[in-house]
Length: 193
Image 1 (spheres, rainbow, N blue to C red):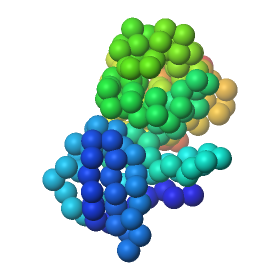
Image 2: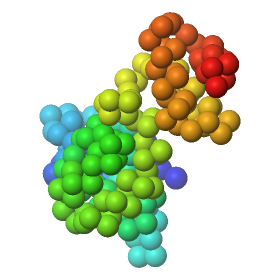
Image 3: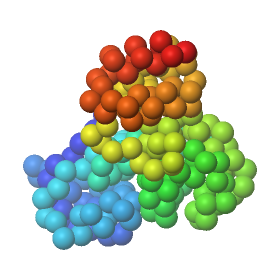
């Protein structure tokens, strides 16, 4: 599995890049967001996802791990292929996608070319509980420095606590004591339930 590419951009187009990695040129399909991040750069690092089909091996590249994670979630939905996921990431930001899914806003998802009502509804149903790690209760993106919240949410979900209930308690704990570590957050939530 090819997970990261680091090298020099040989060719750049709005939907793809060719990256020279030690003499080997990899063609990588990208979203417009990723394209815009690399327009003025020569040497780059790209997070990738390799899709293997009968007739091709296709690399998709992303500026951030978050964008790649959202791409992986989108392609896990029946009826959403890699091309549709890239179009979605080109049309909407990661934050807009997370907000639309967590708030059940299928009209925003339908603005993406190729996404109809049924597909938008399927995306919301399949991913609503999985997108909470990308959005807080207001539907905005969780900052990267708030890893304790994400890890506590994941741990509590493994323990069988519904994500929305866990998130509500975690937000209250972090508001009262922002310096709480993961263990303290989990123990406090379990005491409150």
